[in-house]
Length: 300
Image (tube, rainbow, N blue to C red):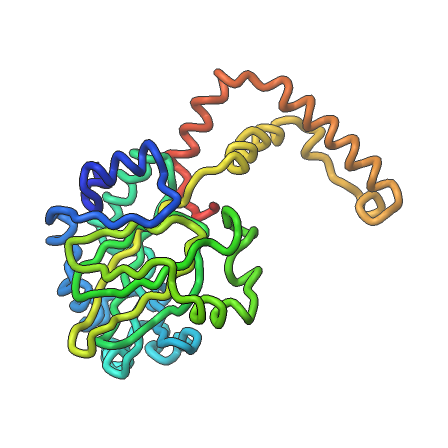
């Protein structure tokens, strides 16, 4: 099981059967992951320029990410510029390792077979005593795997309920007063994550990670598990409506912009209810499971 690459057996069991809603830290044994995607391997990718520029972000708190031209030449990663930025205290974020490294591609696919969830993997290389991203929350479960150094995580309970795509994402509902409130109250949890440890970070939990030591860099991986929801399931049920020609007919501009739109909405609602009532759940189950195991887009 690929989940065993990043969690001990009790952590895997917890994910598959409970789906924790509070952070948990697990001590794990060394696995093939540590040999295939070590901190040294990731630093070597940076040093050699063997990283697609479009998968890179360079950031140092409290500022936003740099423009990619800061580390690109002719559309390609400039390894010298990237290293210079790292030496200046910028965190290097490498996105979608499952698209870059064959080992991570296999691990990601296996995790999807085990969970039915699409997923992606991001690496964060942070210099000593530095910080990349500041306070924010995510809309998916994250499993943070510390590879090198110590990362200190200040955590606060979710300020919103069950965030997901296009709903309660931090950048959509952000309030200017949030950071001052959190810092004045202090974190609900403080965790120093060390090599060999993994942190389960449920969606919605505010996190403000940084490297506390001035003499030690940090490298960690974040495995993002894109949870399935009843909304996702409803989308699967509706998807089959495309086979009905009535759902594929053109809506005239005058219908969409005119006064008759309310009647059109009601007619479509009635047709959709009829579509759903005629579905045979047993016959649809295999199609839904196939979608869960095949969809790789980060839609949650």
